[in-house]
Length: 221
Length: 200
Image (cartoon, rainbow over all chains, first blue to last red; front, side, top):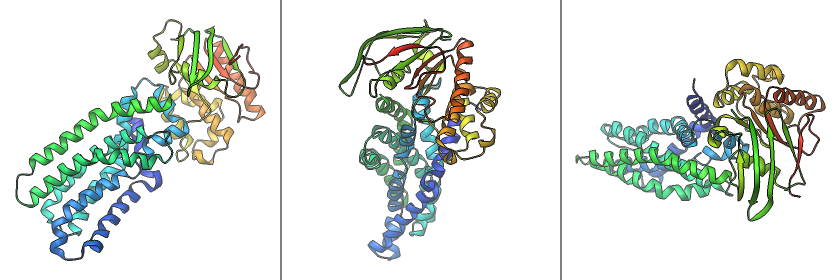
């Protein structure tokens, strides 16, 4: 098994176990989704109208959990030094770390998203698109979030700083995904919004590791 | 392959503070350098600079003619203050990962387990380890993925007397095999080494 694959499995295992990992993230996600009826009232029609959007925004918020730990633990325990001193470029290592984080927390969230939306009253026909948006959007959240996490390395209260850095970067995918879901629910063409979401995710996957590696090197120096 | 290490007129500044200026020394295959100096003199920073983690203000670091990027990616180990181990992982998982990460082979990992007497600890989570056991596991990387240049920062500090002697033997064998060692230590190294005073 090559080094990148080993790093992927290691990261996924660490993210899965980190502070409760996926269970805590999915639990938080359902918690946010459950709060909504308490705030806007239990009328099924009103809930059904906002369910896809709420499920989507709650997913973005849940994706913030654990992001700060993607690099912080490695920075604190000295692993980041050792990850740099290897034949595998740091950019690839950063991408693999984010992918491992996404598999451990983003993928379970994506599976939970349709369930939460339908529980809130969304049309079950929306489920496949919600899942697709959550998978693509989750990648965008993981890779832009990873860049934010790397930029906040070494800062006190880095988790809060990560959230502040990352939330503006979450705005485009939230808009694109929410737009696609609204359009689908209204019977309008939804492909444009989803294509923009997928393009943003692709850009995040391509460019995020460059920013992460530069930020990590800066933190180590 | 790194056959020598040469520092020429190296000046290092951290956080706006000048640590040292004009430092030069060199070692060849089979030789060691012992960095000494008061706390905060810049010993750790110098090791990190050799590893490429910290930039120089002035001067040059050469690896016996090898390309610096290649030398750092494939030719050196850095064993710093921090052990780089995950508390939730077992010693077996950690050693297997780091051995593969640094390009080692499974037979070399087995040798590292034997040399550092880690066999009985392999299935324990690292969180259960004492400081000395963690350091032994961290030092096992040196054998699990052989590289010629070892940069060691107080490598023996958490080790007990017996393991200080045994690690001294491991260092001596590395030098005998053509390796190079640069070690920062407040205690005398148990191997012949060129003394390099930092910050004076």
